[in-house]
View 1: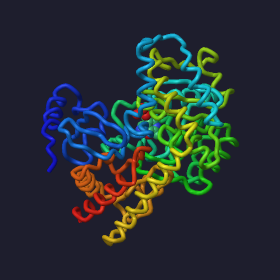
View 2: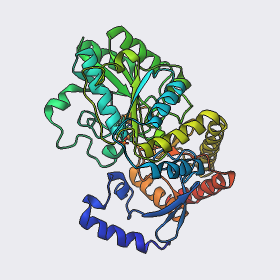
View 3: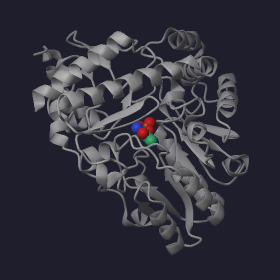
Length: 430
Ligand code: PMP
């Protein structure tokens, strides 16, 4: 057994001062059992905990460390920015540079506004869609997670799903009534829902590849079908690319699937690890945002110079190094193929889903295409698998309903170690 005594002690202390001992629920390992591990440092694909144990990191801060931890170009950009002040509260040159680069890399984005998290990005985007259309309702899909804004905590995925609290107390009935939900990947259901709420739906928001009920791909034609529906009905189509943006391709899921959204929400990846989010899209819609337009949205630390420096370094690298995508996709495919081989060798028929550098192993033999099928997973078994992998130095997301996030620092040796640990872990828990 790994020595985790310092983590255990920190968690005991933390629970006295922080709700549940953590600053974001899934980190508490409630869904998988055991105490959370407190990290001390990380470099490349390896994280080191406070007890000195090393782990191959398959979360990468839930996506943003796409180049690996403490990547030199990013840490150097941050170090260079720090002496010039941590915040101006005024416009700064880096904000212009990063906006210009995002617009260049993402064809559907003509103007972009920086915020501080993915949650802020999605909250702001639906307010904008409501202001722009003068309609109040929004449609989201069961199992998709869009941060913890009130409107989105209805049939939400990710932590909300993991913690068994899909409809959180504190969300008013009025807010819940304005959020309509439809099953993911079912074009007919959402078309009917729109028809039943004719001229009342401001926006349809979705993860173009869902990552928050595990990795779930859109069916052939599904995204285009939503695009056509929104165009026909005057609804703002919002792709929440907080996970997929700059990960599935330079232009995100929109580039990969060839479907353009009206608005796009972006998050963690564009901060390179610093707290950042953004929303952007068609000029005509974005010009409704204050101070140009009437929809209010603001942020004291928005466009913070340190976050912008980190994000700009990250995006510049991704823009000029297409081989990053080749590498992370290749490593992810090796993990996906190797996992399938392991399952076969062990006579297990669990489901896997993968696209680009996103991959999930589901502890169910049902094909996972939506929230209902995702919920057929044996989450207790996943918990055992998670802990068996952790003991072997592999750090997975502590929930069945997440995806792997591969970073560019993952070598073939790491992949080999992951697959060996996965084989042994699967064997151990059956
Ligand atoms: N949207 C999606 C698709 C996400 O995956 C997340 C977080 N994982 C968010 C929004 C919320 O982002 P944040 O945690 O930065 O508020």
